[in-house]
Image 1: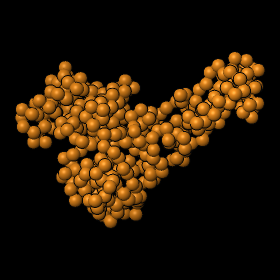
Image 2: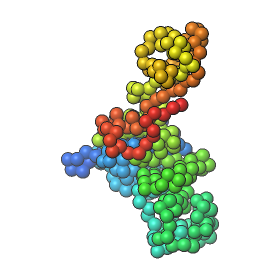
Image 3: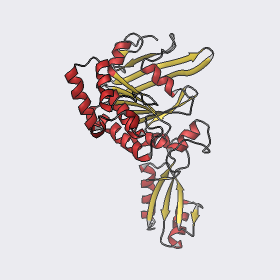
Image 4: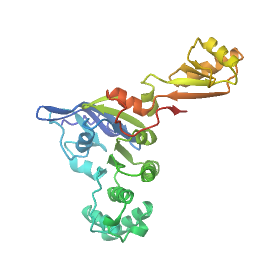
Length: 334
């Protein structure tokens, strides 16, 4: 992989910057020239169906495997990925899909082992281990073997081990797979605190679309090795048709007046509701409210409905809702 020009304007501002990143195995192209720009202190989520190339992307950016030698350039934490892999490793932490813990050791012993591997002084290692046990609410379980831990406790300890070296960038590859809803939300709170309190950059891959919606500042959708869309959750939702404003009225006179005003036939006399196509943006909402006000038509209620990330994911990747990954409710009222 070629080095970025040190004078590049994107590298210093980015925790991760990559252009034309490609990976192939023989004739099989896994990543097809993807570009990434991830600001420091943010959460970036990479979505995609199984086999899209998400884990391969994480493995390349975390120096576990090389990209194709003649394709792309990348900086991670300001270091050239190809020429300075040791510097990249010193700045990052990686939490994979499965907890990398020693079941025969206690939680404290696992953390101390990681401190030893990072060559921390014994006193500093013990201080750091105790601090992380407190932060992850594992102090009472510190002396217990990891084999006795629940799935949620194991994932918390796994992430705690990643933090022993105080990485500036953390790669989380499907960190909540297999967790129950309560444990998943606990992990979300931990991830939010890492960004808000420590300024850590999080590179997240996930199959849970609600997770990306809740956590990510920006989301990219990867399909067949290509990035097919990128933006905030709201920007991605506006790419997909189907959004509407729903107005509710007190009587049929108000309903029919509004329907005539907006030239709409999409209304329900039983529920006294009128649906108006909309992208959910503020200008569209303001236009509807101003129109009602000028015509002296009073609505009893108004809700804005936009496509959710399920719709975005399935539309962009050409899939159907049958058997889709867990995600948001179909209709997401605002």
